[in-house]
Amino acid sequence: MSGIKKAFEKGKAFIGFVTGGDPSLEKSYEFILKLVEGGADLVEIGVPFSDPIAEGEVIQRANIRALNAGATVDGIFELVRRVRKVSDIPLALLTYLNPVFYRGYSEFFSECKSAGVDGVIIPDLPFEERGEVLPDANENGVDVISLIAPTSKDRIKSIAADASGFVYIVSSMGVTGVRSDIETDLKEIIDSARAVSSTPVAVGFGVSTPEQAKNIAKIADGVIVGSAVVKLIAEHGGNAGEYVREYAEIMKNAIRNA
Image (cartoon, rainbow, N blue to C red; front, side, top):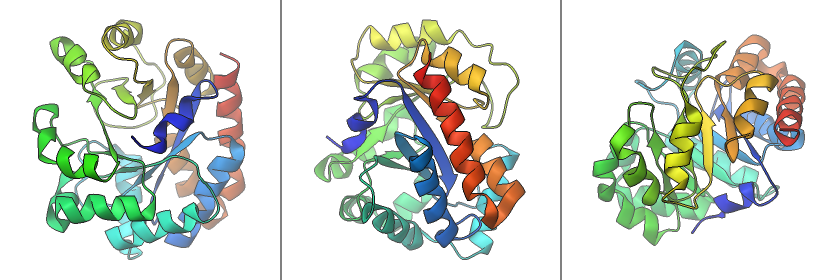
């Protein structure tokens, strides 16, 4: 349906994440392009929200910074439009259901289409309830990306069989954040998903080092890195651009060499 499949056409995909509006929308625009320059195949843009329940401290603080800087849903759509003028990289919004519901499903997904959003990730939307948004998403050619957690177990095949865009495998229990060790049997989850679906499988939550990325890329189609990028932005603020580009390049090379 969307352009997300392009991220996986040339091999293992590196998926980077920024919180839109942290520290400003202007800088988010720069950081997205730096991710692209460093080799990102898809970029997730976090829509700032007051209660991002899937996020750890690093991205929670980024949400607060973005909201304090005046970021809005309209601002995020405008950010996407700016990126679209210079890049055709697949883009996915990570949002929570409340902003989507408040705006109205039809209007939200219509705006996604007009701005150039390829997919939407909604962590607090249960798989069994995704039918609430699918008609409007499908009408506008926007993939609603499903998440599979280590606790999904018997639901893994059901979720994967109905997936579009890519299957988002959550590497560890808990919220997002840098982890020194990922102990989940990811291969078992990935094998279960692939048994019923040809949709690409990407792993996120806790991935931060080249070694972790390389190991995950051996068994998955893509690697998602969020908190480590956001942490660089928190540390360097408006001067984070080159740090983001260099980090993306290191991670992409690790994934490419898996």
